[in-house]
Length: 276
Image 1 (tube, rainbow, N blue to C red):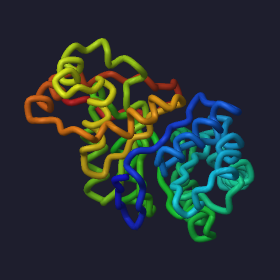
Image 2 (image 1 turned 90 degrees about the vertical axis):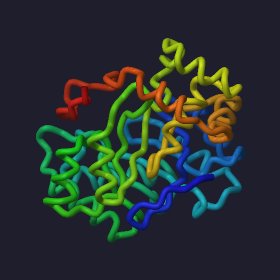
Image 3 (image 1 turned 180 degrees about the vertical axis):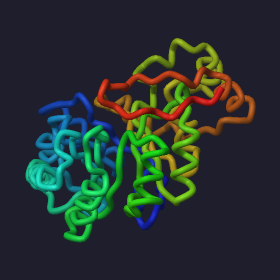
């Protein structure tokens, strides 16, 4: 499994996303992924499945230290005292003593960013989170967090795929040696609508989803966490790096529209403008 190294964190590039998975379905998916070689599992307080992920972690033969586990605190719980309660509950549900990466899931318009980041640092100092980060932060918020507040964040998790430009966020992350984790890396199943991806896929004897995932994972310091409940999908994602895109493929992908955003809640931040 290819790894990302960012500010002292080592994280597998390919992870298993668990959004919208619940109960036995989620537990089975996580156990299956671990059996197939996944070592990066992503969950969140808001997903309501930390208990199911914890059930899988409790019954796998894989050592805890070999699994990279990410969870996130919901935007309603960003006051330091509520963050502590959320962390305690997440650890209890997951049945672990620590998480490898703990993220602010979404910024809140009313949050005290310095105080919230300060609480993340406390979690790291206390050994509850090995590393800390954020999610859904545009470049301006990243700049404030890292350059003004000085928070030792290692990662920003954002929507990123072949139909979404993240140039500004990537530039800020790379400037500070941080990683980007791409959620919705397969554009929520909309890839089939773009014939150019199908042509690339036929050329390499793969699927459009594998083309899109390969494009992401071949980028420096970019990880991806596609949701995959079925064994076939999990294996297809693992196989997505078994071919190489050429310059013509990359030019065709670059020509696709880059303004598609599929996760955009009313309480979300002001996103970076898409070039062009």
